[in-house]
Length: 614
Image 1 (cartoon, one colour):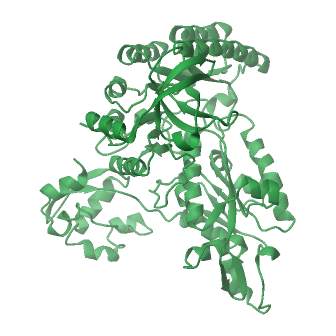
Image 2 (cartoon, helix red, strand yellow; image 1 turned 120 degrees about the horizontal axis):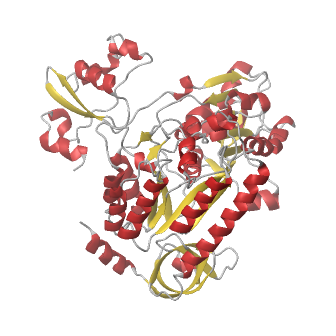
């Protein structure tokens, strides 16, 4: 039962009952204290007969997080209020720095027919972004131009998006690309860059800070684009993501050609921040902020499988990890918003959805009332037409047995669990601040083996953590031998800025780290091969076809429910997005080779979905 359905059934409010209880936006104003004191918010008077001031005050004193449901009282009685979204004026939260001189429009992109235009009147059209933002409000075709103050701006602007790091960054990039395209800025093609010699008007680098030397990689990437700007080209440079959040103003000091530095929490608000950039400002947006729902549509990299964020941020304080610093505190998305997004994806033809969260098992613990991830998993898994459902990343400290049960009992849920263990030694786990033990981790694994015997289990591990001895490292190897993971992402410990472990004594030497990394990689390869070898000669293995095999164009690539990559002969134009039954003919370390025996038709899919619907 959704909140809207509940409102239509039990609400006594004649004004909102037939509209699912919708109240609309409530203005808090610039000063929360003033709002509480009644000094701000006169433009809310129209709500007095629906949600009186007394109830509004109670609601915002208790919470301002999307998804929360608050009980408030007023002279009209009891009000059950759900906060659907929170709008923050990001331009007031960001820091602006006016450039010393106006960035001129590239001569190739303007014709100045009025040499006497006042500079003050042209301030709003600085740089190529002025033309893009102006074009957003124009009704003309995207290839036409806009003229103001004697300057003609070509609207055929291009961008290039470079993404580093995890699935969260990929999802953020998709959302940013959706906003850029809503402004009329299109992605530059490989042919335009390599064959025609065109260069993008706007460059976005979505950064990751999880590994050592991340900052150096960012500055190295910025270099060629900064050179273009110094030589007079009108290119906008945006640095987003975790390095941007980590470096903030320092990034502008080192690379003054950068126009916008923005943390991950602003991925939904790129278009708003670009308005300040178009006015000739350098912008730094790294303040903590609620993540607002995005009205634009992400530019999905696949037409078959999609990422869907369910929780942002992380409240953990692992002593080696910079993620809580760069991605902020946990913020769960309202369940009905997530469900709506998944339903829309299915209606567009997507067959698979992966739910994303830095600590996905913490979903709902920040909400009022609290929710459980296992319940969300079951609800989304029942969406009609959704063939496959995955999720990452699970934390052993919070992963409940109910999540495992939900996977076992939800037909759409894939038999694939990603649960980082980081170390097999309890002393090292305690020093890492992981909040779980080796025993707890193995209990989770045993439950998976019991409930979903054929499931694939993948993980992350760090070797060479400060103070780790050879004996403690052997505990990590022994845990891997006991579990026999399908794949493990291995990494040597690297100190990250603003993390406790970075300044501890007893740092392992690079030689020790590399020696242990070689041992653990060898074991990982052996286990990966053994786990996939069990698939040999299996028949009727369901594979969702995703893309062409880039190395052998006559083959297609898909994945099993375990997440194993499978290559098969076939025409991608015919098979993309289809479920096929495959016989596994050969098994390699990290992929399988199979033969398609049948293709599931839309009629079969519809029949299966009807049979599985609750």
